Length: 295
Ligand code: GRG
Image (cartoon, rainbow, N blue to C red; front, side):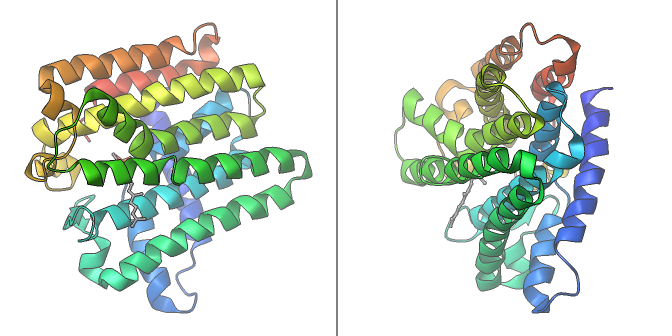
């Protein structure tokens, strides 16, 4: 199966589960409506699909990884909601629609993000209690996801990103921002997917390397698309990194060199899975597809 087909299939599976997890009719209605607006409003579902593919690479069962995949999508969605707020990136559009705070107000957007973040950990803890043979692995995944989201993960990256706006920055700062703001959660999705799927420590070490390089390549291509991408395909205003004088690969190296650097990260991601055979084909193709991505 091609990665595009796999992604479409798993996106449908994950969306049905996200829909089930946050009820339309729960009280108080407005917070649930706000959460659902962002959670079910498009999105490629890349992190859940990577978690599922990593599990498949070690012969794991999809239904046992699905709660992890959804928890990670909850956290990703919270990060986008907060990132779009006026105190952060101040964006009006996301996934081709108005951002959550433009529809529900800033207070509700902060709360919807908070509720998604906390709910994600409830899902992980609940799942740990549900399957005794997976309890230790789900608890370990919970720690990894928390760390990847927090001060030394996504939040750490966002902090350095905010501090770097309108300032001179070097290669090291840039790599730190990308690896933490974006890469850490992607890396955690891959690593935890494999962990829940039953991976050995040796296999997990390879997944870590794959996830690190995939995450970097993903954010470099995101930077490039902000310069050369189309608004229709990306579903948000383009050129915002430059307007905000953000620390990006094209700003430091130019677009052409950034394309080469993304391709090198993709090669390193693929190389991490050397010797894995056909069961890792999906992950290999997922990485290679980054070079051609348009959204
Ligand atoms: C706690 C106030 C507060 C803010 C936190 C954590 C955070 C703000 C921001 C995270 C940083 C962030 C949003 C990085 C961008 C990562 C990125 C490229 C997102 C887009 O991912 P895609 O392309 O999006 O997978 P879709 O729409 O497909 O889900």
